[in-house]
Length: 178
Ligand code: APR
Image (cartoon, rainbow, N blue to C red; front, side, top):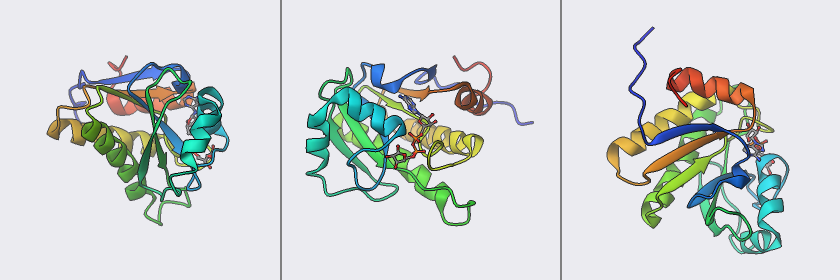
């Protein structure tokens, strides 16, 4: 078992509802239409209010692995970064690469805009069926790679909505993860 990698102080793990976080940006696990849905997408649109959907309608959709920025409206978060994860179809259709690109694209927006902190849900692990452990490993690797090369954002929060997701991130981050 390789020694666990040092815990990056800029990475945090939390259990809760991402719509409650007062950060520069929360990430939405959207679909390519960007006009809302269930899961975290539905929660974010409900909390942000109808103005979020109105702005999303001006964006022309989003391809899997890409990301789009909007305001946060009634959310405590100042912005929402919408990304579209891969639908899990067994792993032989580039799903891992698409998921990694989701995290990289969101972090690139945060860097470009000088955001201090960004919160991610466990993208693609709900309706899209991506296995939790594989998704957490991809998420943590993508964030660690970005943070090794850039000073911003200063804080990345993985927000897990249930204990299954928390356990997956704990296994990847090491049990010292908060
Ligand atoms: N806060 C944080 N995480 C949440 C919340 C919330 N309020 N609600 C759900 N989650 C978690 C789920 O438990 C899951 O771990 O977000 C993760 C992603 O699950 P989904 O929201 O189902 O997103 P995804 O698997 O990427 O599927 C996207 O579902 O909701 C539709 O419009 C969306 O079509 C798109 C698809």
